[in-house]
Image (cartoon, rainbow, N blue to C red; front, side, top):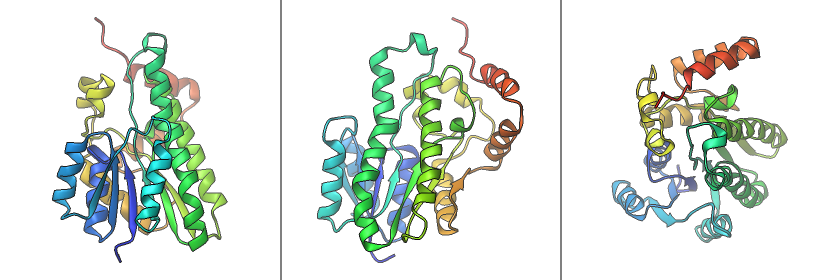
Length: 256
């Protein structure tokens, strides 16, 4: 690449850090957005300065505007990887209301606002695009992850629709739906043991490579990982009643 700018949110760990690293290796400058400054500083060092840290809490008022302004200062984004997200494991009624609302602000509103702010520059240039990182959990109901799964279902529908709206503009959108991945998500969501037992646990670096290959191929919807594709495909074919029963067992909260 020619040093064009990619913006990656949630870049301090997991898939976001892997995407930022992979894009830097391709020659992009990467505006790496996350809350943990020390992680971003380490990423900057590891990429030889191609990752440009921006410490921001995307749930805060004005944060998306600040990210967009910084991207504009750097020449405007060629690519947005909207990856930041968080989960909370447990019955909807038991999860504190404030935590659920903050999760929805980050998972849904922050990415939507940031995309809305960055698209005009891409459209004016007639090039660029958005990669929306959602989850295979957005393809089926996820009891005990109800609000999280709902946020990912929104992103899946929104991202696919956006891709169709952008046809003929020179700007693209792609939705990627990773499955269980070896990241800090399990710890922060309170389901590390459950994820640790998931078959075919993917590595973030492998997800990043797969996502960029799918982007290069012009895909609109990408489900990385063979085990993840099989499970997502099976659930889409089963009657919804059966899918709900199976996922309720899969995502059951341990007794005690």
